[in-house]
Image (cartoon, rainbow, N blue to C red):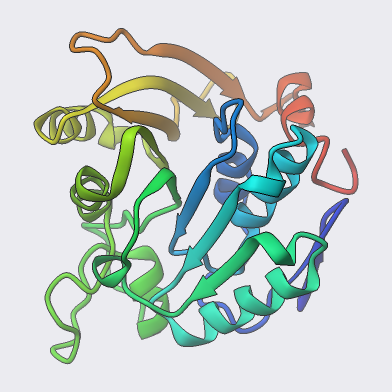
Length: 250
């Protein structure tokens, strides 16, 4: 599909290495934006969907006027397409997209959000661009060390670039929960919220959406919630309520 249409915006979905996907929409809908203007970094923005969802939600809160959203992507075509999607939206004045690696992105942010690569142990995709988008390790010898973004590099980057009490939000496979907690604590990031996502009631959680806060009180007990996407072949009320402001069918 070359154009994916949401209720308040559309995204060109042709050149980006990774297309519009359920993980990204879930993260954009669950992102905790707070009650004051924010600077947001969408790392590995792809089509720019998460950034555009953040802009819509900030406008609804009356906070967009003093907020700013930056999308970055190491893939040139993805960054260009996301930039086009930003400029085509009604929130263009508050958004920008840059073709830059995470490690080379300067600035400080209230919120860093990402649907990062996570297939550490799977076979690399023969499409090198999709390797960059979905794998934490890229086999090409031409890629410099650290060019492939992962939740590890996100945590390390957030330690230096999040503002005081800033938040890092990510969606990851559920099996990453324990190593993520350990790594985050070693970098001074406390988990404040975790949403475990099941595709159906009978299946184990397949994804987690986590919010990690910089300089949060030691020993913070995270809020733990669960979302089931489908039951008996139908979307659950919880899932429909979460995405109703975005999907056309909502």
